[in-house]
Figure (cartoon, rainbow, N blue to C red):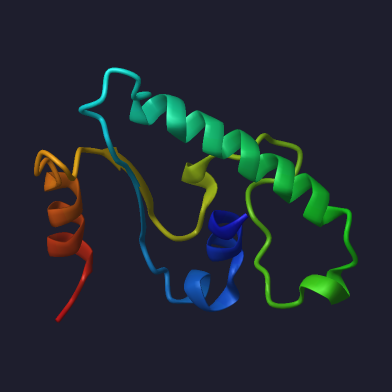
Amino acid sequence: RYLYDILTKATVVKKRIPVLIFCNKTDKVTAHSKEFIKKQLEKEVNKLRESRNAISSADISDEVQLGLPGEAFNFSQCQNKVIVDEGAGLTGDVSAVEQFIREYVKP
């Protein structure tokens, strides 16, 4: 729900603030791939989108419409860039976070 709120927040979308979804703990045997997690998140966001679309637009005036009507949601439909990457903080494998900061965070 928090991710949905970020992706539909008018101020975030208008400024095209990039979002990094970092899948941590990839060093664990039980870790899912970033592709699996991305697909699961897209499914959950799609469910939220469908339920929110049933709500009166007066109740969600600060939200931007997410995705394309009649299509299942995927992150490529977002107006701001969404990056899904993976690593392991415990082992220091955070190059995806470092790259995101270098590329998108301006001093």
